[in-house]
Length: 296
Image 1 (cartoon, rainbow, N blue to C red):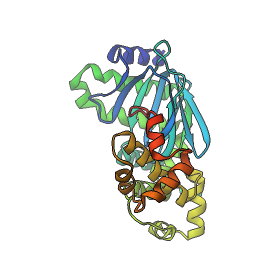
Image 2 (image 1 turned 45 degrees about the vertical axis):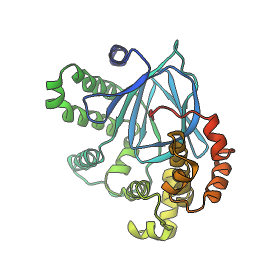
Image 3 (image 1 turned 60 degrees about the horizontal axis):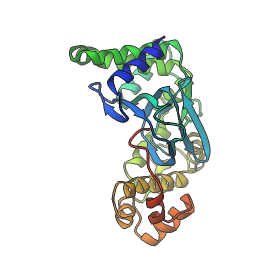
């Protein structure tokens, strides 16, 4: 019942296609009515809940499809390809996009471990870059309670942060909870490294630099990083740079500008690596692709 109420709430607030920011910090509603093939994108730490239709995300060749039966948690910034291949005016994709407040999620993760009477020690497992979780009753009710605040600015201002914590708590207790705790709780070295890399794409950073920053040997860091992202650190950085560049080109920047923005000194090297990744030169790709309009 909660899910149907959420769908009606989105229908009422967003009768036409688009992505709208609500008065709740980090919470967006979206409606997609056009089929869009998968294209380069960058997922930020996010929870995406779909109540109608389905979405597709590809991470390092692995296809993830989620719909109203599963919500998606992305606990770390990740280079993906994303699209809505089945959306149409008759069968639109409706949902909620929630940017994760890392500070709040970390505090809540540690509070949960403390309340249980023990601080979880790092178990050596890395958080998954994308995790799908079943819509359980706790998540559905928490999301509905959060969105119900939108009808009252006063309620939003007073209760918004508390309801958001309730939603995070439901995620941490649900099927994606292990990935969330590993990314935001004790032992979150890989997630912290990815957060740093995503904001320093134009810098020259080696594997040794990354490993030493989190106090790991090169071999251990490489293994744990690949467990989390399915990619080696070097592959990850290259994918992040190329996906960000593709999005910049789609946004109107020239190929040279986009290449320089993400740390490429040589435009020819950028074009070679871009073509190897996507099968087209940057200019060819710009004329043939359409990126999802800001929806993760």
